[in-house]
Amino acid sequence: MNISRYNLDIGKLNEKNSELPILLNDMIGHTDGDMILFSFGEGNTGESSVTDPYADDCTDVVVTAYIINEAQDTVILNPEYIISNYDMSISSILIKRSILVKTGCFNEFLGTGCVLEFIYRAAFMGMKVSCDNKGPGIAPYLETASVSDDTCMALAYMMCRHRLYASDPSCIPGLLNYIVGKLKEQKSPDVFMRMFGRLTSDPKYFNRLLRNTAPIYMIAGDDLCYGLLNHFSNELTRIFIKKGQAVMTTDGRYAPFASLNEIKDIPVKAFTGFQAGALFKDFFQRIETPKFQFWFDDPAFFNDLFQNLNDTSYMLCQDGNHADFLKRRYGIAHAYQLAPGAEAAPVPDFSGRELDIIFIGTFKNPPQLETDDLIANELYEYMCSHTYMTYEQCFDAVIEANGLQLEHEAYINILYCYAPVYRLVQSKYRMKVIEAIVNSGLKLHVYGDSWYEYSGSGRDNLIIHPSLSQEELPAEMRRAKINLNIMSWHKAGMTERVIYSMLAGSVCLSDQTSYLQSDVMRELVPQYDLDHLDELPDIIRSLLGDNKRREEIAKRAYDHAMKHDTWESRADVLLELMRQ
Image (cartoon, rainbow, N blue to C red):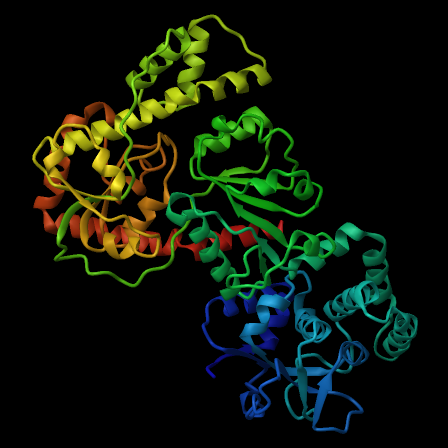
């Protein structure tokens, strides 16, 4: 097994006690070791004290510590023993990485007491924890002469957790009396009792600490869009596990399976889903735990779905206008723009690609608008003549022009009823973009059987390939010089296809959005204007004819996406929100 080793100077760390668990968790997230060793000391790494720790394959955690009045060289630690010997001097801790999906990592609210609490939690959850009992010659992590406030806090939390979840809670009074008596010899027990009292009297405060290391519950995506949502949930699950988070899932892939019956009575750090209808149901809304919902479609087409969301719901929209809509129309305070991520990719070959330009998307011939509805016809014309505006903005303009004033419920219902106009305009402009390319004589590679239904002009310049799974998509993008992107009428966002293109080392050519028009992104993603599609072929030829410029754009875009747009980056954003 591969051991990742970290040596920490505890003298320096003591100046910033509260940052220790965050530092340790960050180290977990940036290593791939099967085992992770943290050694604490001043001028002494403690590494030499760890010898063949996995001779017993059942051992999950190995602690090197000095336990007062313990004569044995090796001790198997159980929860009560750890609480009773809270003053052990910990020099190092070696963790089998695979257990973290169940235990979670270090509690970020416990300062330097996080190491003691982790040992306790691992033992409490049934992991095998052994201690190499070394004498005081090794530089101690915790001073035996006194007990820090961090240790008192960790100890109080451990006692509260033990009181609530221990299989035999009858041991609590005796254990508590023992702790108080022992603290009198080392330090006034007032700090411990004050913290213990707060945790027992303030369930919200206790649950905040409890949830910090509780499992993240991942709702698996469905198979729509060639399994895209399912792929997203799997990727984010893997990254959370890599970062040492406890995780449970609805499908049992990568992490333990858990049913709704199982989670209703246990602490959960957060619920996460990808356009998951379940998170809107009363069952989840009654649980006072953050719910993170990645949202892709225009929320205007989901009628009253967002009516009863409480402050624990976070809507993560790939379009900033959609987030703004949810705030204004539904009062959802936690609505933010956050596009889905993509899996990190090795540095690609930016030159010598065999395909000039590809488009990975489905096709549907746009139907004709055949209706006598005045509003529908005006909305269609307005959207076609204002391609930079959102569906909602165009709808508002038409409603105002007709002198209509609508209350919230009527507004939402009518907005929803005219969704077919939106889809018609979206399909029409997808056709117009494709026609602008193929009518110019450029060859365009497309994927999937839906393209055999294409009825536009320039059909002979379409090269139709079999459809791609999500797993096959990155490799195909790596064959292309240019990846064409056509937004689904997103006017302030970025889709995962843009990120996939950037990570594949291919230039992404997209229609404009305010997000992509920012100072940074417009240098990384060349864009075309839906109102000037006659210019699109020249933009493509310019990129294809200047290998140096195209490859420089692709390299910068790759570096940016690796830094800001992988699933690891998205997980960091979510974990930061979970800390609040």
